[in-house]
Length: 301
Image (cartoon, rainbow, N blue to C red; front, side, top):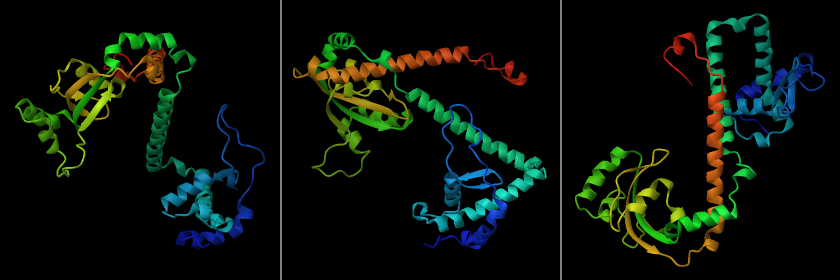
């Protein structure tokens, strides 16, 4: 197979000299306790390991496709420029060239990017971790919730919606609705031409209580049939105006039909509450020290 990148081909002869340049260090490199196993080295350069991640980075950066189809020879060709750079980088370190001010600034920027990635990904993993057995809702809790919310849970709600990315976009539409323009007419104007036989995408039909987005629920509960809400604020740049077309009781909805969904809902809520409390404790107990110039302006974390 031919690796379609001219620099890889031009630098392939360098590999003929690899035995003199490479030194495979025996044993595994020291890693922090609890760190995942290091990726296997494709090659070592004076003891410095280069792995498939280094190869993938070079291929992506140089817009070379087809890593999965690379033969051993193609892989060696692709690694040649990486090996060359590693050798020259090691020599630059030996000469103290890493003290260059421009290099240091660029390095700090890249280190900040890596630190930001680490923070964001680990924080996301922490917030998404399972809640544990303590977060599982018991049957008694689920049954009590159903009985306390029976009127809501045993009803269906016919809802229409206008969805925008900002409240400002909804204000003129809401003004038209308040002025008496039918909801269907206002909504249709936001969708352009819709075939007469097509479903109206703004009309959600009859929904169960648990199908209603959380930000809607208090509003829906207090709307009269035919009434239109104020602007409702959601998360992730989601804003709505909704109309409750109709509300009707559904005798087919019982505790047994809702047991599984309510157990999952209440367990998720308990897990979220437990995480919120744990996060509060972590924030309160963390030692956060601001620099002198910030400490006077920022009273606390």
